[in-house]
Image (cartoon, rainbow, N blue to C red; front, top):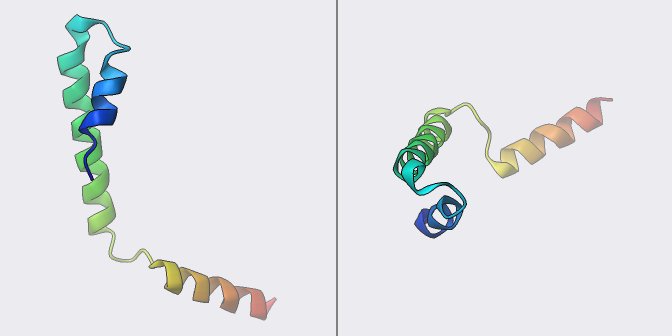
Length: 60
């Protein structure tokens, strides 16, 4: 997924002298979030989550 168009759009709302720093910070946050999601192998997939929810509802 290409985030650059959305980043560029939002950078236009920031003063010119702050754009480079903000762009770098946004990209860093995106990378950190992606790494967190990839590393979290314990997180269930959609169907696994749905099955767990159904099992929980059947127990009550």
